[in-house]
Amino acid sequence: MTVVGGSHTNFDTAGFSAGAMTGAGLVAASLAAGVANLRRQRKGFARLNYDQLLAALMLSEGLREHEHELNVERAAAAKRRIQALELETERVKSRLKLALVRR
Image 1 (cartoon, rainbow, N blue to C red):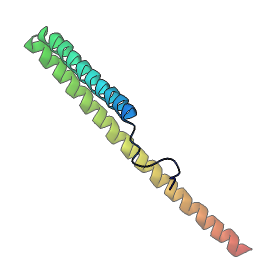
Image 2: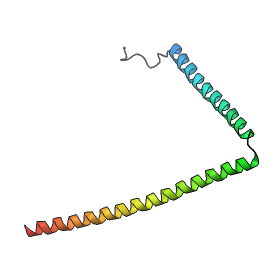
Image 3: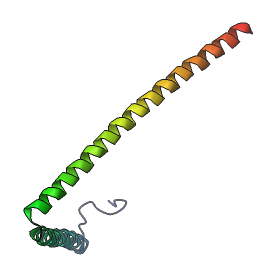
Image 4: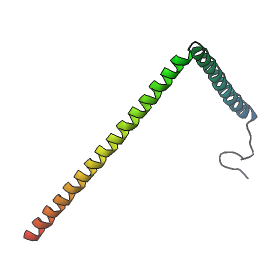
């Protein structure tokens, strides 16, 4: 019996090996890049003293807090805009109903 597209047991070992080697290479390259990045970061932080590290931390926290405040403001503005649009939708519906009744 002939199976369309070939037998499901027709395993291509060369293709599988090539795919496995490519995948392993990509994982190894990613790990090597991560280790290199960690070393660069450690060297960079090793040059800083306590006060500099503390100042960097405080700046980072200040920026994070500021971004949070902006997000809260944006959410409140979006909520007000939605409420205004809902109110306008109700007004349009009322005018439409009135126009249909007057016909």
